[in-house]
Length: 284
Image 1 (cartoon, rainbow, N blue to C red):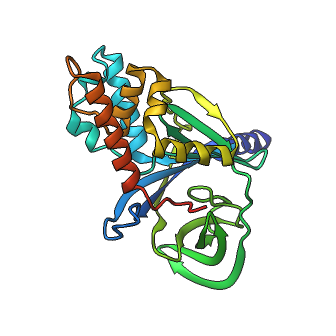
Image 2 (image 1 turned 30 degrees about the vertical axis):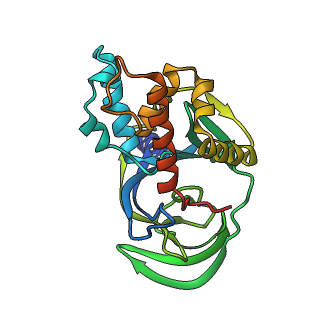
């Protein structure tokens, strides 16, 4: 009987360790370099399973759910109201996946109609300080690093059994509770955590193209300079629907509009979006 109890306890512990934990971070951003008073705040999830973790926008999973229901209902994208999609817009259009087994970090973001994915090739080298303090219920310790053209300060806790953090940050002997850059442009603050059944299956519209990080940066710069070259590659309607997803075509209607006028409006919107996001989280 005692042996049976030990087996049951072992199975229970195995089940608990196999569960996925969701950490909710409040992300504060100043994405417009020319208007630092325009502060954006939204939540993002860091979902951690035994094999990997994924960091992405809370609004993304909500938006995917709305779109999936619309398509399943047969209405397509046209059945989704403009107000509904506006309320789910996000400044966090990327996702970051950390492969724990192979110690690799993968970054994904949309350029035009496709998802571009690259493996992060720069290690994050932390300088850990002896300085400690309390943030909420956690005792945290200070660490600093230079990454992506910014100087970052992180506060991590060993109260939780994870060596992870928001965005690409991790590799400290504990979970990052807070990390911010020295200019105050970006900050990630842990708000709460809870268990979920499993990692969500996120929808991906368009192809996934694997590139090197340097090539991703070049493609991103090319898209900002000449967005229509990407739309033309996508082929007419595909390009237009992509821009709708980015926030540049909702509520405009389809029908009998002049294609040249539609393309001009799309180009203006994409360039406008780029201007509003002229202060990215990585400056180099």
